[in-house]
Image (tube, rainbow, N blue to C red):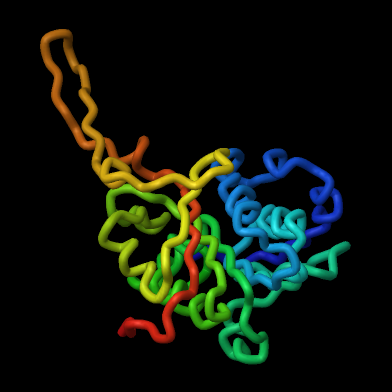
Length: 242
């Protein structure tokens, strides 16, 4: 289990004047956060960020004109030079979540797929990711937006690193939400998911000139691609997760 380590965010003021591609923790793979926020127009909104090692998501949101942000993160975080961003520990938030009010939007990028796998100091929970999404449902106002980024492909668990989301688990994750759009890479426009986006690719392995065989490729495209799913809080109740 990872040991939480205190950290200080003092880079936000400088990053606000930079191109997001220069400070994104995921390079071009993180740009769906920028493009989806531009597309949905979050100006003047109050949001919550679920899991954040560095404040790149927060800065992109601030560049898009948000009013305030609350970051929920296991690592104790001191924020300097930016009063619009606050930090809270997940356990503390769970105790007092009703006092925080409901948010216009939530963001989680490459975070929830780790939930319940004990990689970042969280307790073991096989459906920890589903629970996290249902918690977000409770945090959002009716009609609120959830910017959710995680690996899309064939359903699988890479323990204890992360999960990959396919047809089966995506349906569980989207319970209570309406899927609005999907963004990929540095493309400012949303795209439509296709059947092949959830297929296992077959590759040929050459051993000797006369010998070859096919294997399932679980690592390359279309597997393990970080994509941003835009979800709208669209229901009055959730199907329970036991």
